[in-house]
Amino acid sequence: MIVQMEGVSFQYDKTPALCDIQLEIPQGSLTVLCGITGSGKSTLLRLISGLVKPSTGSISYGGDVNPKRISMVFQQPETQLFASSVYKDIEYGLEQHGVPKASRSELIQSALAKVGLPFEEYSERSPFLLSGGEKRRLCIAGAIAVQPRLLILDEPTAGLDPPAAQALLELVQKLQQSGLTIVTGTHDLDAFFPIADQAVVMSQGSVYYSGPIHPLTTDPAKLSAAGLEPPAYVRIGATLKEKGLIKKTPASLEDVLTELQAHPLAIPVISRNIMEVVEDADADVLPTEDNRFQAYSEVIHSKTTTLKSRWQERDPRVKWLGMVLGSFIILGMHSLLPLLLTTGIIAGLLGSAGLSWARTVWFFKPFLLMFLFLWILSAITWSSPDYSLGPIGFTNEGIILGGLSVLRFLLLVAIGFLFTETTTGAPLREGLEWAIAPLKKLGIRTRNVSLAVSITLQFVPWILGKLSQLQLALRSRGRQQNKLKQWTPRQIYMLLVPLLILVISMGDELATAIESRGYDSKKDRTPTYALIWRRSDTLSLICILLVTGLLWWCSLAT
Ligand SMILES: Nc1ncnc2c1ncn2[C@@H]1O[C@H](COP(=O)(O)OP(=O)(O)OP(=O)(O)O)[C@@H](O)[C@H]1O
Image 1: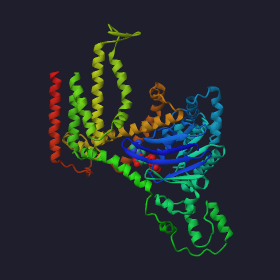
Image 2: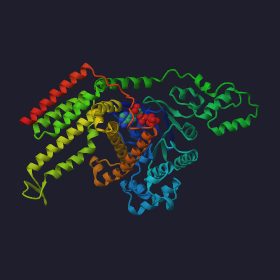
Image 3: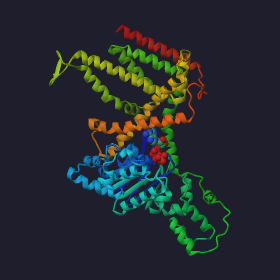
Image 4: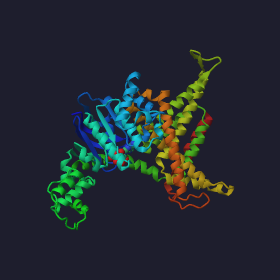
């Protein structure tokens, strides 16, 4: 076995995604991983690739496979292209794998030829300006150039037109014939079942079926029970067999045609809908693994949902007020004691909102380097330093004042994080619009302001999500084990360009979507969320006023 998983479970922050996975991937096989959306395919693929570690259980690799010899192509090609040319993009992975410069050109040429992108035509083109199908091929070229033992593909045919999808299938077959083990996550069973050696069917984070394809196509109920529609050739074959038009259950569309040619009977009117055949199948009971997953999820969810929903229920006006007042007071703090006191209060609030430390740390990570840089910058002096590091001098006063400023910024970010994590888009916007409504009298288009603020605030988690996707993709190209190396100037530069492109295109799409829905800032809007002030909101307001008053007094007194 090239990969063996034993009792693997995984959860994102506090969201359970996989439960008790047992899985084996034989060497040289093509494994199809299928399941309805959200069943855990992408998560399982990331675990197999070694990019993320299981929460419990173990993954072992056989033969000469280890995570360094595994390449992964992600679902969205646009989040895994980094360099200014096709050549450089593939070269990046080779460099990370320690391939000497002299050998790189040959490997790049060979990889591009395998995926059908002629070297002369493509090597100098920008990866960002390729078509969707070409991007997908380039990602595969980058993945195979490093000569992996195991290739993992996540939804390789998604979004491709039929000829491009067919060409990709042929490429996958060729790669497998060359000895590569391949695991692919897909919804496209019609395309992959006929060429796969084994299937893994996921259902609610568990493996529902794992084994050869044949039992799934002869008994479509197995797929239906996991919420999947059997491939068209299976449904057609089942109906034809029921009508006595063919004898064998077909293993592909070609089989259906061959069988029909062998039985040249007049085809009777088929009165039953093909789907009825599938619906007849007993799809009542989900397997025991799913029940186990349900229990696993319930335990994890029950711990957080009550806390979170209590925060979500608060009237957004209280939260806006808390954030604005809190921010002003933090900006006015110039000594350590009130800042430490505020840190403690905010940490308590984060805990009471059910936000885990892992998520909080994940959110703050991208800011930390910037804050450290600002701190160092504010401590530097060119005259009469208290300490010297070569030609650079530092003052005690600079270190203290810089540290306080950084702490102030961190607290402001923390308040924003708490607010956006506990307030969804509609209440956030309604609350703000209520607060700035009086400005309408001054001729200010408050609708534009509230829309811009709510989109900006919600853009932050989106950008952070994309950033971590890009980081994961970079890691998959070179396996940077050292976490600090993720933040070298070169790595930051590699991330910034694609991130900027993603943000600009997202902004563009958003603006088009808003315009196409007939947005007019002059017209009144139908509220999507009704603001309701409860007694508990009055209590929260009193608490906010008391605490901020206390902190204000403390910052004046110290
Ligand atoms: N970064 C994340 N943070 C929190 N939860 C996540 C994250 N990524 C996925 N999940 C959750 O984990 C579960 C499994 O998601 P996953 O993406 O693995 O499913 P999938 O089968 O690949 O879905 P699809 O076919 O839509 O790509 C889902 O419930 C999803 O909401």
